[in-house]
Image (cartoon, rainbow, N blue to C red):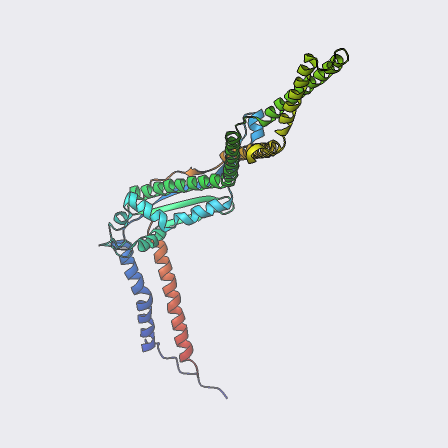
Length: 379
């Protein structure tokens, strides 16, 4: 049995859901793109970029090479810590305040605020607002491996952008010099403190020696003792000579001879003088300290002075070595790209922004349409 042919399909007609899909595409995709295009191509002002490239370098001088060849200077990349500090400094409020004081950043960034409030800076903004805007107007590329850093400063004129890039380089140089000075101070601080303590100790001991000499009226007790010992030796020799003369004379003259009396008195005087000189090494007169105690005090002070002089010499040598080492190592900023002067505007990137707007709005519209149809077709 043959089947009758099916009737032909009716012509497609535009239904309300189709109109809604079209209008949603216009509202979600076309209208935002048109508004963005009107703003970007009519209202938004051109922005120029000035590129600056530099790296932090460390200069080291080898002592041995300086002594033998005179070519001891070597250049090497610094540790990443200084570059990291500089990377943070360029984005900080500190550099914004300094450059604002030099170039009046508020005026440079707010010159088109009345006609372009979205891209311009509000001149009544705070320093925090200016710092946030500053970070928007910078493009920083930093390679942590090599320490190379490129900065693109953006402004509404090419001259302003170059002036800002130059100011960034100047302020970065000041920062690196400060870090280098701080490193030198840290390297020599402890050696300087040791040297100061050694100087104070040596000065105090010398003052104690001066007070000792003034109090005892003795310049060099060791020389004084040597003189006393020489005097005792001489007196003892004279005593021995007088005793010999007495023995020789007593065998040839009678008792009561005036010469015997004279020799006897000489012997008594010499012995009394010897006793007096020996007494100086015992307890002093009128409660004064013994001469031996005085000598012991002097020897203690002399030993302290000798040790203090040795300590001062070692501290001085260590300080000079620390100074020399600090002077052989210094940081500096090496620029491999000088601030450039742009010939055409690089920002805002209108084509890129328009492409991103169309892409995301289209994706959003497609997602909404798919969700609508999936809900509509559910049983």
